[in-house]
Amino acid sequence: MVRLGGAEAERQLIAVAHADVVGYSRLIGLDDADTVTRLHRLREALIDPEIARHGGRLANTAGDALLVTFGSATAALRWAAEVQSRMPDFDGAVPEDRRIRFRIGVNIGDVIAAGGDIHGNGINVAARLQSACPPGGVCVSAAVRDHVGGRLGLSFVPLGPLELKNIARPVEAFVLQPDGMTALPAPRRPW
Image (tube, rainbow, N blue to C red; front, side, top):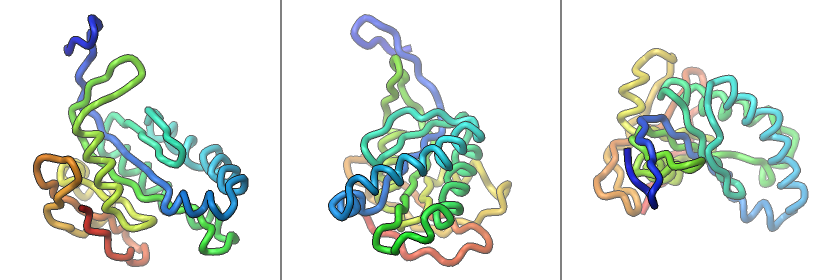
């Protein structure tokens, strides 16, 4: 237990997925009402039902960003892979420059749960992995890759140790390459 302002907060080991819309500011600039409407429909039709199906909890939102927690790395990775594989069907008829695409970072970490909020390095690493991810991709820490192993029939492309903004040590990272999926563009090298 950790004491926060007289209240006790609990430490938990959880899997964290951080998803962010690629080019959200540009999409809002092109058509804010349409972008917000489509993102809302996407949440209702795909993201939120998949969070529930995989036993996750939406911990936080910030505009176009989602922070989702899971009880296992396998559940988090299944959710991320499912969302990313179904995204092209969601808005395939929309012109390419207006399509909603996510980057998703997944990590396992020890976090502090205080009330409805969670804090900790595990969350920060997931957010930074997301920023290193190619559009439409899922970037995971070595811990996630090691926990999941070959159970899901997914391949991982090594990125090597990444220096992530405001993270003390390099993080060994991998990009998910689902079997049968077309090759993802090369991930961005962060910071």
